[in-house]
Image (cartoon, rainbow, N blue to C red; front, top):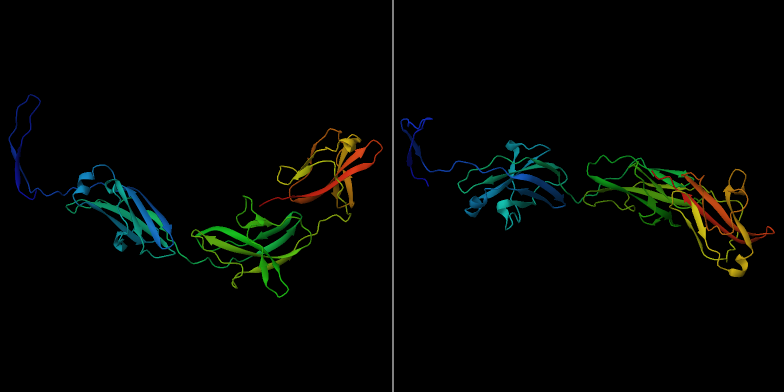
Length: 354
């Protein structure tokens, strides 16, 4: 290398007749850049960004003789070579770096957008063209600001908590806390796991179980990609106090069911109940079962089927129930003379999640 070398070249026509020689001189300097890295990705974390890339074949010999990579970063969402900064990589290449590499950028600006591009450099200093750029939102350790527009609306199936979207662009989810106001004015927070979200509205969630007139306080926090979030006790957080509806029946029904096991389903497509009748002597007198539902308009429990369910019935489903309501039921075991020998009351909060 780096030595002048002379070559003679001539062409042959179709009949094999040679032309005149042409003289070619080479100084032996390799000026051919390597191929550009491909498949560049970037994953941000608080404190560093991991840039990874692959290298097309043909870089093995260059790598073994001192070839390397350069990682560049420019501010914003497009790669600007005039504003680029060469990254000082931490733990850059692995044992198989001839196939690609990793770069941990620990000097990038936090909480902003940057764009990376990678080049390959051979032992002679020839640098490839830039790889395709990759944009990343860098990490941070700062919690998003307080959520605004918090509103709590009492419903028949719980408390609908809604809020305005955060203006910050790294929000991963919203977390709703429910708490109880103490006598001294402080709040005992019950945690963020008492509310259920659906799939149609990112800015609302349904909280609560049975709407029985209790008063709670609610707070909404934004959580970013990095897990940063305020605590509801932070003085910057908006706390809203609201009282549930009280949808409980005005008629008290006493549970008197010792005939066997039973259970009701709150998560099925419709409210349902299933039971067993294992008290041999008493169950032999049962001629059928009656399921009634509380009607808040008439203030009475009304049967949900004609006559009695058969004596061998062991399950019932409310085909007329609609989401967004709380239903109260009674299951009664009835004998031939109309006497009730077993009563089981239950309720189902049939939520219409948002």
